[in-house]
Amino acid sequence: DGGTVGAGGPMADLLLMSSARMVLALAGTLGRLGWMWLLVAVPVVNAGYHEKRLLHNLLDNYNVLERPVVNESDPLQLSFGLTLMQIIDVDEKNQLLITNIWLKLEWNDMNVRWNSTEYGGVRDLRIPPHRLWKPDVLMYNRGGAHQKSTLESD
Image 1 (cartoon, rainbow, N blue to C red):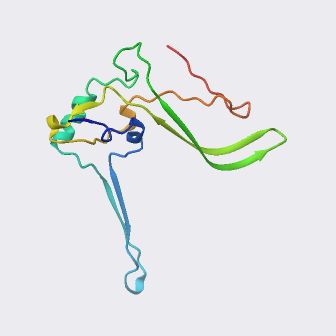
Image 2 (tube, rainbow, N blue to C red):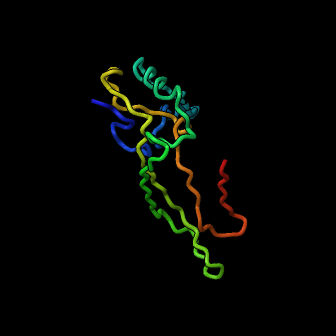
Image 3 (cartoon, rainbow, N blue to C red):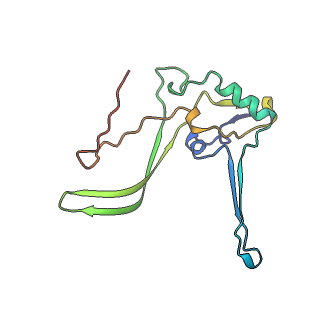
């Protein structure tokens, strides 16, 4: 039984995951002094032996600049979704629409696969987003002369 990042889910789901947990708790007032206690626990990474070994084996020779395909000539299937979250402003005179949008990108990274039985049954793995390939996404039709999108090739 082979495992993939996010238990077979798309890589984009992985990008939203965090490798650490932050715990924040507030205690109420104590006595007549009205002291407020703040307890902040530092991020804790819960990674066992198999997860650490898997992470090392997957990312040791991983190149974030290479498209995650078997052959360089193979296309990469990329799903793109856009959700309009909020219309912030409409400027009719200048024909500008200012919005808040969420982009959802999904793809399968062929370089991040493993056999879960070889890694103690590990089926899910949290990987920091900066350690993985991500597509270049540029806004084509942006308002305002001061906003430019450029992408230079090598």
